[in-house]
Image 1 (cartoon, rainbow, N blue to C red):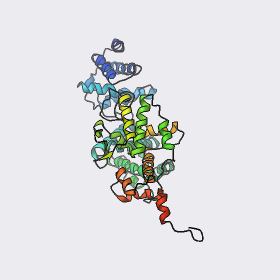
Image 2: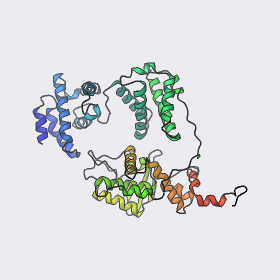
Image 3: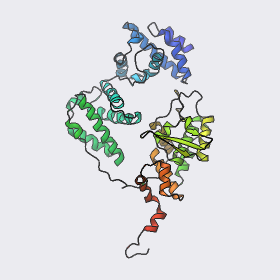
Image 4: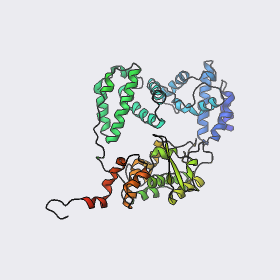
Length: 406
């Protein structure tokens, strides 16, 4: 507790009585020794700031926190956004000291204040899933940075040409699916800004549509042997390597979506029946799949020798650094991308591993209907695109080229 006593010696404000409890919670959450002093120094700074203004801990509203963080942000200090205060706010909230909601992402700039209101709009009024709201927030942050700046003043001068230029520039970096997601998210943001009275109703209509044709592409599966290169890139002597190996094994063998893998819990593993239960977050359905031996071995290897004993969740796959919470779909994508870099395979997404799993099953002789069952498609037409990679079946129906040999 030496760090706590050192911080306490520098404090004379309303937070001095919470130093030891906060430090103990950081230890329980698994924070590294190097991270704890930083958290305590930030706590001491906040304590002095509150003391100078004769405020107590109950005064820590989002507005007050934004006022505290603004000078740190302008000075470019470490831990300069309100997100850095989240561990302390979580602790104070747990002991009933502060009215601040511990899970809120507090804002320090006008643009961040607007983004926080947009986040609440998506989650509360629109009822979107957290992962969907997070993806839309990323696009919204990029658009506001380009169109309005950190002070948000640029929204007053926003016009349709800027909206179109933003879409055109960003779509050059994306495929059809990513482009459609971008324009959907941008329309959502502009509709929210219209409801807030910040822009006119013509801007949402100025977002161009993206052309697309169903089943026009070919599933982008990995080449033969590339899946093994991904697995071999994991250092299975480390906790993170065992976790990443298990994640990649599940994705390449069962074709799970990133969100489905992130949602897996220990209760979804039925070792006696040899099954794994998958939850479809979009439709709320739960479906059981056979658990292959190699997948089970990879998961048990991680659970026995890699998963932190102090994990704060029943999720199977958790963060290695503290706090050991469950992975987000974005973090699952990060695991795949990191493995692809180590294996020198370029950029690979979790969904590409889903295509690879389906293609491998099909090439092993399984019919399309079975592929659809494993991928948990509701409609046969969704699986139909994989017929394009079933070359053996295509040869049986291919007609001779005019003037050539069959």
